[in-house]
Image 1 (tube, one colour):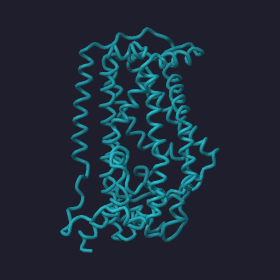
Image 2: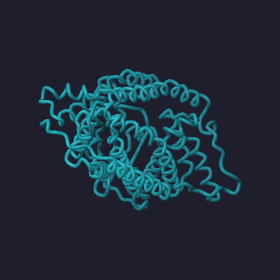
Image 3: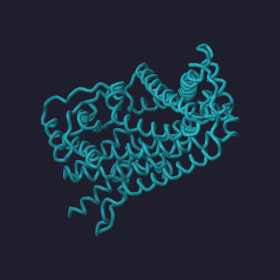
Image 4: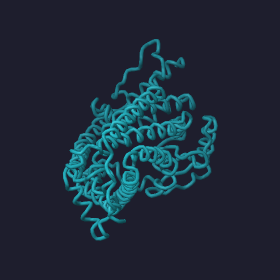
Length: 432
């Protein structure tokens, strides 16, 4: 990878065009989210909505245990987030990122390609190492409360595997972006935005085939009345599946979960082995009914398309930001086609991800509520729905009543109390 002369940076007109495209795509994204998000699912019952009451779903001892767990884990999670952003800022807003990229690429000739690949890997690994003590503390807390069953060796392997996958994919993505910036200095952001959108779509299809097997083993569920009923449930939902698999989740956790992954010929129901050990067949059917709801309403496909649109808007915004000379000088880079820009790129991606998190979770909570409605309609068994939500809350140590700000920013699902109250509204709506 040679150190060819950098292309001439784009001018102000190109920057303005990139900003205009980012604004247009952002507005289009807002319209799509407003249209496809299920804001209202059930009309208000005649007798009023069911109160959201955590004490109705859990015993005082269960509430105290979940709150103690959250109090032990939440500060470490916030500290890890802040520390990770601080590391990114050091590499992105000083010349440390550029110096790192040069240093790690020097043994291989110092070309821009090696600067991007090895610089990205080095910066991400440093960030992971800096936050590793907090991750270890979090694992210790999960062990203390019985949520994690991983050995420390398996934990270390999982951390190494996830870091390698994340760093490798990120490095390849940034290599493509910088290569496009070198080849098309005035329109690179348009090409890169299209590539990012396509990558989101392809990733959604490949994730269950390439990433999931790196962490769990999946075996077909043995023939049983439950397996037969889950296939029948999928057929009634209008979303037939190819298989029902059991994941060996108990190697790592006591948490309960099930999900549907894949598209078409790769679609399968996946059930944690912990679920089979702790829940009744009716409760498992309620969980699977919820997951089938995501398929029935094309939530994964819709989410993928929203993600693709968001990726295009984000890259266009990058095209505007990376044309700012003061920002580039601070990072020690000459432009988006300079391999030394990786530190700044990683910072901007991290900030963009954090800023978009509350909106993503707002949409997610409403989508999850719609899947709850599908489960209730499909199984016509609100008692099992409530029982399984309570069991999930106890087993997963969900905070029964998280702080409003925390739930708004980080809550991807309604709280257990909210889901139980929703089931109460469903019963009232159906004359229960």
